[in-house]
Image (cartoon, rainbow, N blue to C red):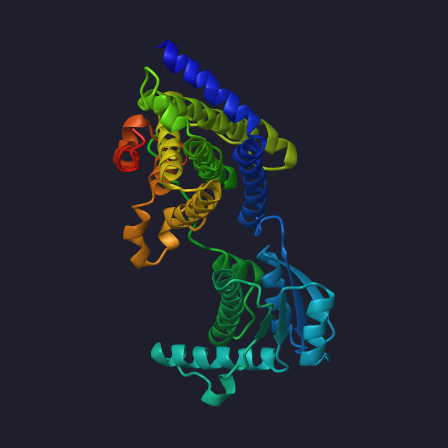
Length: 426
């Protein structure tokens, strides 16, 4: 026990001297979790708070086009900016650049006339289907010219499709309202009362959103709940910069050889490093969780809500930290130089994080990556954390993620021992 304690003290002193490694293990993850959470939280609340600037060029003078603009405004998704109807395509594009607008919408000249004609065609067909006589209208009269939407190429396709869906719903609402008015007038020969129109058009079926959790809670997960666990895992695995380099330095300095001449075993040193850096990973988790709880509300971000099962959270953090430390030691054993350990370790962590779902959600990955994703230890770490943070689960609920993580960790440990024997370091 004395040998182990003395070795732990030695490793702590080496760790304290490694200022660069400490800054990377603590400073970089803290910056990442602050920056990424701020950006993602802004994206999550884009519809509610940060409206998208939309330039509107209405070349139509009819009533329906103004109704369409009002409906788009009531969506709450856009900040409408009216521009002159006489502007050419080039001037509209220039206006997008000067006003820093991502979108511009052009309503064609005959929008209202064509929409009314289309409503009459639909009404005539409906009356004929009911056995009533409808007005004869040419089918070509209802060909409404398209509403042109200009967009900046920086908008991603998924976001652009959500914008298109919002505009399509506004167009459909305006068309349905006009068809309803025309149909009512054709049957009753008088305009549709405003009160009745509002009752008919606003009689929508509500959508009740319920997050599926294990504890039955209805708290909707926010950007903090998603990002803090993910970047905590990233921080843990970045101990490879300090720990991997430390092992390489010991190999190059001859410490391994000197240990063979002493009445001790290198496995004591190996256990010491694991305990020391496991403590570091727990401190990393504690620091990032504390920032999520206490600092985030002061900078306008949602506070982190810790899981109800604190024992489960500590246990999952220990397993994730042990896997991270095991991976770092394995890199240090096989690397020939400190540059190799730092370079390969950092790049491999980024790759494992990418395929593990930390940077891109697992459900958004192509099918070919699903099997590769399960080989990443960071994926199982994230699944275990999400089971606690997002699904409200307990320790027994996340064992399905902990078991593969333990298998990967033990496999890494065996590879490390095999590498030490092949290199005749033990």
